[in-house]
Every structure is written in structure tokens, then in C-alpha cells.
Length: 154
Image 1 (spheres, one colour):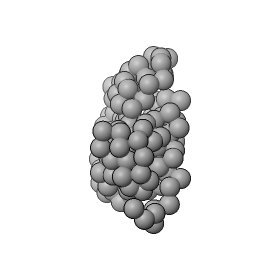
Image 2 (spheres, one colour; image 1 turned 90 degrees about the horizontal axis):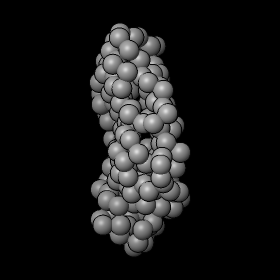
Image 3 (cartoon, one colour; image 1 turned 45 degrees about the vertical axis):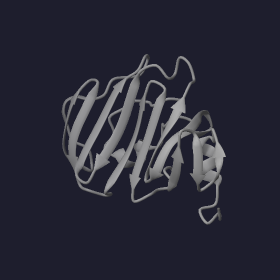
């Protein structure tokens, strides 16, 4: 599984739709609203792609083998005020719907962020592959973290 790079007006829904398979992502580092994992599926891990929005700004980029390019030139979707693209990256202004939301993969590193938290990016705490919250463990996959109850006592 890797990002499918496309130009979509409904970027928020797309942010986590094509993320790295959580079962293949080992939690490496996390603090509250953001996490970083190690992704070692080869050759899918080669390249980079990401999509994010922060208040009224949106951004997407993609440089992966076999992935279709992003929009080129000026574009406008249902939520966009304006969007400009140059095949491998896009920048846009849109009606704000969240504070901050993002998902990126650069080679073997995959990072997600969400303020406020969403189910795809739960509140987590980890350092050097040692997860402390919401589940304690070493080299825990992100799918295991997402299944852990948030009220788990330590």
C-alpha cells in the first residue's frame, strides 16, 4: 500500500484514505497529536508523497514510481478557493475545516499529524520504538496502537 497521488477537491477525506498500511508501519516516535513510523516494504517505500492541510492552506506532493501526477496549472474544486499545481506538487487555499491534518511518507519514514486528533492519528506517546501510550510495547505496529483502548491504565 502506498499513496495514490491525485488532485482532489475533498482533500481531507483523501489525507488518510491511501496511507501506508498501519499493519506494516512500526511506531518509531510519537507525542500526542503526531507520530512517525518505520515502513520497510520494498519497493513500495521508494519515493515520497504527502498531503496536508493547515487552516486554509493545503499542500500535496508525490514523487513515486508508477504513480500518476498531480494537477498542472490552476485548478478549483468544491472546497478550494484556488489551487496551483506543477505535476509533482500542489498548493492551494481552501475553506478551513480543521486546524491541522497531514500524512506523509518519505522512503522508509511515514508521519501522520492531526490537531485535533482523529481515529487515524490517535493520541500516542513513544520513543525509539518503545510505545508508552495508549499501549505499552516494543516495535508495536500502528494498527495495534489504533486498536488499543484510550482509557488503558499504565
